Length: 114
Image (cartoon, rainbow, N blue to C red; front, side, top):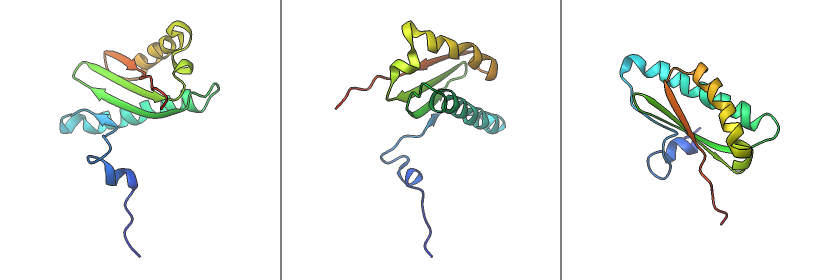
């Protein structure tokens, strides 16, 4: 029986980028990794598992010392943003309470149909 390699792990660094972009000292690495998992789980539960479904395909996380940036790639940005950005503002207070970063921002890139 041959060894199987996960397709995403095989492509990381060649044709695919990492899902998280940050560096941490050894003491903080585990804590930040768990925090990334919780962020992805929360976004999936909030936007993919409850109606109206936003069809989120990727969640990328970037960190600096003071800032946490969550980039959400979705097929329906109108569902995530809401009227005049109301849905994004609903996510902000709960996000600040859950995670330890002082300031955070979200980007929802708009995709153009091909």
